[in-house]
Amino acid sequence: MKTTIARIEAVKDLIQEAVDKGATSVEQIHRTIADLPLDVLEKRGLLGDEGKGARKLVDTSIGAVYDTIRAVNREVGELASGLFEALENHEEAQANIGGGKKKHES
Figure (tube, rainbow, N blue to C red):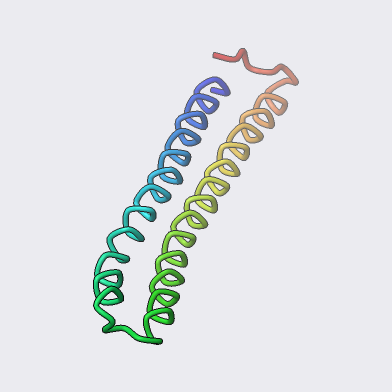
């Protein structure tokens, strides 16, 4: 069972890394798209002093969203790792209760 849990945890790690990298890629695209209308308005002189404030607000908002996605991804990964560890500990405890012999790993 330990081998199975190790494999599942490896898949979890791959998924967690993919979500993190995906969020970063989408964040960069989101920032680029959000900048387009602000650039046009700024070039035409339609934003004035509010332009910098608008840019800062958009940038902060986008950053907060993707930081939250990455934080939730990290927390879910840690929760899953904790569950895998608990399963391994449970298996080991069961083996010790059953006569002190450890089950053969698969």
